[in-house]
Image 1 (tube, rainbow, N blue to C red):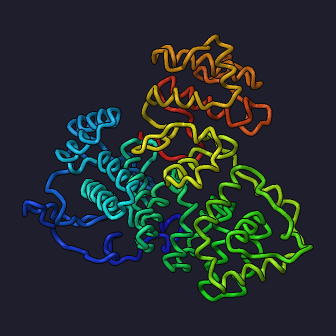
Image 2 (cartoon, rainbow, N blue to C red; image 1 turned 45 degrees about the vertical axis):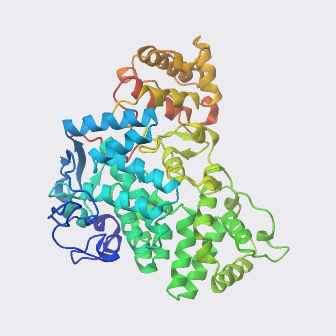
Image 3 (tube, rainbow, N blue to C red; image 1 turned 180 degrees about the vertical axis):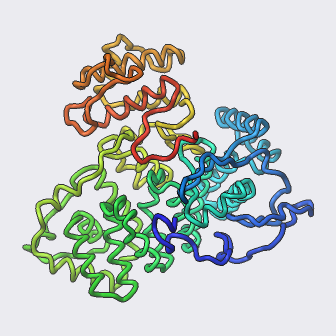
Length: 517
């Protein structure tokens, strides 16, 4: 992380772990319920508690996937032993059976099985038992910590460790950290939450599969760490990837305000308002700020598209408490009152880099995962219906379409059921008017091949010809207004082709590693 975003992007040196700042840094092992030592090795994530059962990780380990040349990042992946895979199968049977008693029994016999711990933590969270949910998540993170490769700790502290989100075993770690961030925030432990957020951002800064970039500002400012935040967001690599986000623009101004640098706060706030006036309008409504009549900001200003509507709602929902103080409200009102004109580009929204990831109405699968995994219904309602209709599994929400493992048939069926109308019409063209769930796996994959070719043809792209490598379908650019449905169908079809051929979908430029040398 230091290599990418500077020293402020990682916790201070001195051997302190993430758990250390929250107190109770225990050295050596902790005694379990039966009095035996749970672990004697220092854990890089969480130190064990005496109330936890004494047991092994059950076969969870870590391997080095690739070592970067000339000081480049080293990629790691978590791995499951044969015994662990057997417990994993038992877990999925429990989930499908929807039998909580069986789940409890499984956890009793396998107290450090990650997927089971994640499932139980979600149940406790839904019951508003945030302390219990946090304890279970800490047990999961402790298990990861005692399973890491000996090189991982050093590379992590240097900012040179990578964990590909495409590897299913890695995704369990991502989800455990992601949920723990929100659990810590719920309990007001903002400094620890910020550190876990920065760690996730460092593990895959190019892809950022949980879009930590949309919350890293709130974590830092609530932790009263404006200098660390500014050092991070002013780094060229961060600017290149995230300068287009409204939360970063507004929070930069707020960070300068926390540092009592009023002139810079006003300068950056004016830039943010000019670039994202709809965010200011939404924030003003939340804070009951009235703007002077006959000024540009007195008129109604709506977000230019679905994505910026979501980003606006996300920011206001999370930042309103930081802006509600008398001094910050006055700052907003004063700066807004000094703006007498808005450039026309403010109403078009900033340009976005084209993505080969699946999108619905401009909202990528990563943004959808970010929102769905929070469970916040007031935010989920702003997602395009296609994303909201896709059933998700709590222990692996919206797995990436380019995952290195072959996607389950049920997930593909759910995905196709959520396709834009043009895709469903293409399905009907191929004579498949029946229920998608009534066919077998091989037949389904064969029909998906036909569907992909049909959509490519109707979209204006050419079907597989002599110049097409490995029979891949050539489709038009995903931003073309005339593509199937106009909803990112081209990119989705390319990913589906990867699924049906068993090799994973297309990989986006700059995405995480494949998990292979």
